[in-house]
Length: 409
Image (cartoon, rainbow, N blue to C red; front, side, top):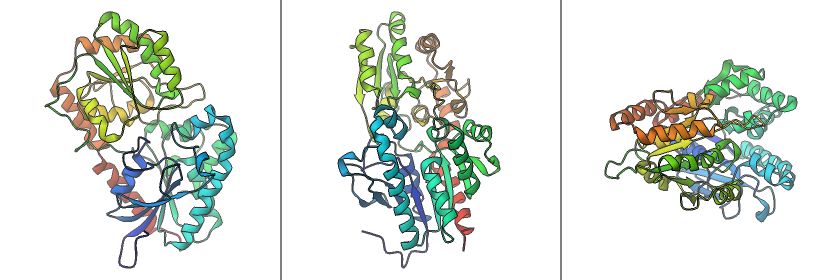
């Protein structure tokens, strides 16, 4: 199953991450794999990611060699999926017992791979714990590869405190290069005292060429609101549901389609029942990337009611809004720093985070005055130049090539 590298002149890139698709069509966030598979023309790509019930321990997925490390008995390997590590720890306190074996398991396999494979460069996704694992390997081993680390948001905003901030500074200091997916995150690193001279803003991508594009043959609804995201506090779904009774008084034909999964699912469904919205709010569950475009292409608007949580966690970028706009769907989003990295007030309706009244007013205004097709295409064109995978993968390829060239001897 392991590719024979004898005649392959590409450099070897080892990707370490906690979030990764378990199989083709998985509903788990797939952006790490989407980037990895687009780098296979320049690198031999190996992804070292957590094991999970039902997933293969070793396979080739879209040209990426995926190795899944063990960290618990099979049925207990549930720290990562269905909400992410931080959300799972908050909802199930016992899972903190899985953290040490998770870190040790990935560290051990990374150490072994760095000695059994000629790894030229390492790409760690998330400052903690993957960036820390890479930094320690780099410090403790004289032959370890140089590493690039990418922060996606929760690792930076939700994990706070003197010790954690010092660990983040250590990771940034040791890395060959650091990327964050929004300018707001670069500012946060500066705020905690990290050296941001080597930090670049480089978002993850969206397939705006093919998958997330308009479909003129599909009639757009005049009444359907769409939400796509995990059911966690920072996504703000509860505010949108709270806005629905007033929205319905203005537009009785309106209805909300909800796509996603996560630890708040029962709470959100109970909220719908309490407000008597059973006939107006539909939960479709988790859907694969292949199933999303048709929803974006038909909905009257996409609503991203993100908030900053009491712990400080907030959205790192919010690519679902880019997916929606790529399909020509008008966007309403919370006016958070990361969102302003994507849209300005002329491209989307930006509203006060956590304000039910602001959400209600924006939705009703968009129902009353939907944007023209020309306007929607202008927004889409501006996003393609920044977020299409052809652009994003090129940025990361050059960055990783630079780090590989400067690899320690």
